[in-house]
Each structure stands twice: as structure tokens, then as C-alpha cells.
Length: 156
Image (cartoon, rainbow, N blue to C red; front, side, top):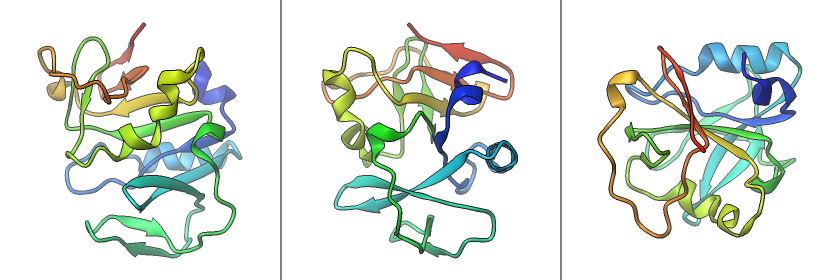
């Protein structure tokens, strides 16, 4: 288990959609370790984060992705310690391709102005999603690490 995961108190994750990396074992670990688990909610082109416990009511958004119904106790993005996010592909330096909406890039744009980027952004994917260098735009937010079924990749 990674030290950043152990130290983190507010951890954002996601519920797997279609063929995304299965996060259910990670969610169970977050709950078992009595950490605050947050799920993203899409609003006005960005992501908001709300606490989520097993059994909480969920509602599908416009993309058919489950989101918490309870919208109280929002955790601000800069108050999260660790964010586990889905990806379509990743490269060897920390660039990520998502599904194309740019929601994570917009939500965590504030990291570009910070001397110490917080929260830690960790992509979850499969080793076969590793790609040659990906094209990067100025607004792209780089990952700090990627966890696959085979390895942990930390970027500098």
C-alpha cells in the first residue's frame, strides 16, 4: 500500500463505468480504514466532490455515470489529499487521455499555480493502456502517478 494512500484522509475515487479499472476493492479499503471517500458530481463543466458511503443513494448523470444524491458536505477539490481518476491512456511522463470532456483538467487547474501540487492525482488503468508520448495541451493537468494491475508508476 502506498504511503500517500495511508496518509490521506479525504480520498476521491469513482465508480467504474463500462470497462474502466475496477475501483470497488479500493473503495472497500477506504471505508475499512475510516477515511472519507468522495465521488465526483458533474456540474457546470467541472467536478464537485461529495462524501460517499456504501449503500448511499446514487443517481445517474447525463452520461449514465452514478453520482451521490446527497449533495451536502461538499469537499473542495483543494481539500482532497488523493484523487483516483479513470483514464483511457497514459504515457511515461504523466499525461493522461480521458474520455474527452476535460472535467478533471478544469477542476484541478489550480494545481498549475501551486508550488506543491495538492491533491495527489493518481490514474487507475490497465498496463495495456500505456501509450507512446501523448499530445499535450497547455490546459492538461499531469498525473503524479498511475496504478495498473501490474505496477505503480510515479512521475517526477
